[in-house]
Image 1 (cartoon, one colour):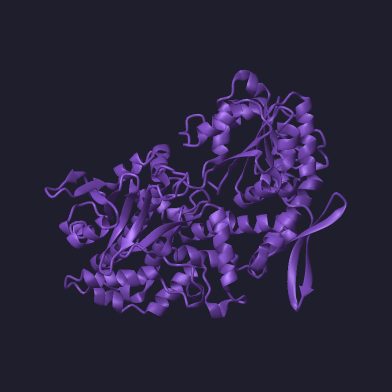
Image 2 (image 1 turned 180 degrees about the vertical axis):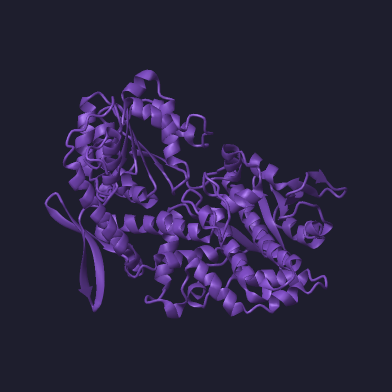
Length: 608
């Protein structure tokens, strides 16, 4: 490094310093096991947080880097920077004036999310003692919404606006001091990003509404720690916050914002406002921005955006007492394992047997059954059936970083499963869609993850495992391609059903009386099923749907819709069938007997 740093270099090093943890790595021996912790002093008190085994060395490197930067920057206590630059107030980055304008202009031409207008109405609306919270998982458009809101401020509003970005080393005491200073300078519009990184945010969140919003500031809080906001709303903010959640991205919005009207692209990358590319063996293609590009990027996303989200919130709130049954999983570094298992088994009930049995891919067995049913004499089923399933499963487990029961140091219990499910629901990562039997009794609800890309990438991992299998690697490439295609086609078909049902439920009109509210559900008969039934009690009508991941019409796709016994069973339940529709990827038309083949992308787009 040069003897004398430029202003730009100083600003870059100070920004890097703000993102590095304070303190040192220490260890304790508990019940014969060595536990590592990050320990630091804050307001005269010693604080610490547990480090999993794979966090220890990276944390040591970060701590050492902080020491190096601190030593370097001591020689530059008051750098002369350009007018209104991005500056650092303690451990909080600040953007005002021209630096704020440059930052916001990046998003000026980007399409806006559906919920953007709600945020803009809050900022432009009358003053009240409330804050607006924009929260959701990483890469779902939160910061972009803040940038776009800044671009829509009037000149007078912009002159009184500021963007703050907290770091994990920041405290609410520092934030309070900074806001008091900014208030004295006439700032009235405050956008605070990554606010949940502050470990005392949950306990002191009411400062934003009770002190500053009440005195005339418009405050927008944003962050990836959804549980942190959830706890803060429950404990501190109560009814003093407007909530805007970004995690769920329906197909229509995904299509409009990204300009991609392709259901397969949504299945591959849905759930994020950024798509990626699949290149399992290409190291150069790996990038942090495309989370659902491959199995490793997805595992990393699950770890950083979900598992660590849960861990951070539970650790910071109520001194970690809300960990409940998850503490032993957290301390053993196995929480990501449990979440991965739930994601892979999303089409099954949350049963203990799912986690306790040796991992087997439901996709693999389903593909074998499908190939058997479609066997045309080419020997495809025999080929798949001759695979060494244990080797394929072992490779898949290695890809997905999933451990068998005998490889875990912590046993999985029903309490673990219940806790993880509850937190996934709170994160809006999980939904349950209704399933009814032919006698109209409720069956166990069907679990659907709201980010389809996370689910599909595990099927890609399965295909990757299959093509590495020696028996397949030596076979005819044409036959191998058919095997791969059938595996993924089956998975896409089941995922498309999930998408259609969950988005239809979301779009149905609300009714305070549950007995009068329209509902959508799967209806299962002893032989066959309707993929979706929409019941409108007030009109006493039913709409029947089959959902097929196919781009061509086939009479077999409508066989249940033409079954008089099934239709009679539906109409016996206080209503009449008014439509029978096959949703598929081909063009829309109506058959002579009234069955409609409708393009599924058109259907989902019109749900918006």
